[in-house]
Image: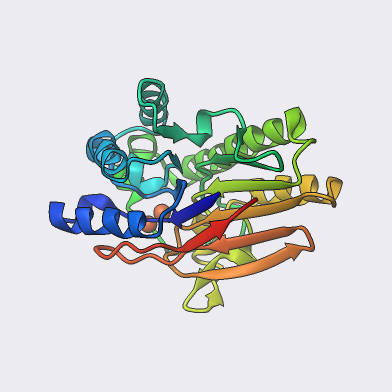
Length: 265
Ligand SMILES: [Fe+2]
Ligand SMILES: [Fe+2]
């Protein structure tokens, strides 16, 4: 099986012919399936652009959502709408609300959006303010304490989903692919070839998901866990354990690219 992976494609910033060119580039790599690790569009355009993409590539598309996908919407409502809508679309699979997906007799796919959960770095001292807090309804009108609590709750939700899937039936697989938008470790939070600093880490890492990944990977040394993520728009690869690797994908607004082409048997 051949997999094309891309992240942070931000299709809403592209003109129709630019989107068509990107979809053709995906097809030119002759994949069997496509993985997208979030920041696909924004809430009002998300379904339309996902549909356009899936129709154009005509392949199963497995995805999670990123923070931008909730802009001008609410996290819970967008997630619920995408979950319900994907049930009516044969080629579109939203992993945050999916059971594990068997890719081969040895490999399985899981995922969750994740969220920068505020725990790494120095949230209280950080001067960073993301547009999320103005453009996503869940954060509007919240003070810093309430934002911090919300970020942690979102991280915990992602971690709980992944923990449940890992404990519920991945024992027979030797390889697990886990898609998530937000890097789960500071070591995977690449920015211009370096790790993000304490001001950015709270928004660019999901510690709760990282803890689950370490725990389940340690419990299953015979199983290779490969995490694909994005959000920082800077690429890197880190080996957290002998059997746990994290790939963070490159991205640029207006010029989406393929992060990697993976082969599994
Ligand atoms: Fe992005
Ligand atoms: Fe993002």
